[in-house]
Image 1: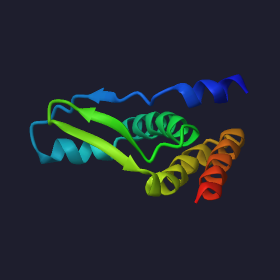
Image 2: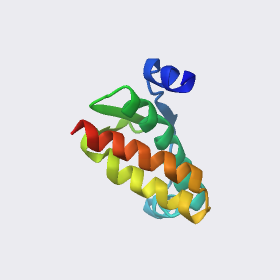
Image 3: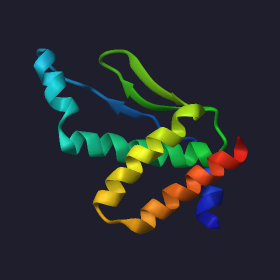
Length: 112
């Protein structure tokens, strides 16, 4: 109960990133790097939990400051993203976290 109250009162933090690349191939390599993908998904999950519990219509996830890009997600995209995140937890056989994600999806569907 205390964690839910804390999540409702929190604002999602925006993760600042600097993406250093010298050519297009560097970006292609980064986009397929498992560590990078997992970092992005887990950081996104943290922000989405706060956004859902705070009933936010959108959330800013990342500030790629060296490119002057903000990555924002609208509420209508929360469920597909949570599905991708749940895939990661299913592969890791972390069914407790999968259950938490299903509850977030259920909460979103109830608000529609």
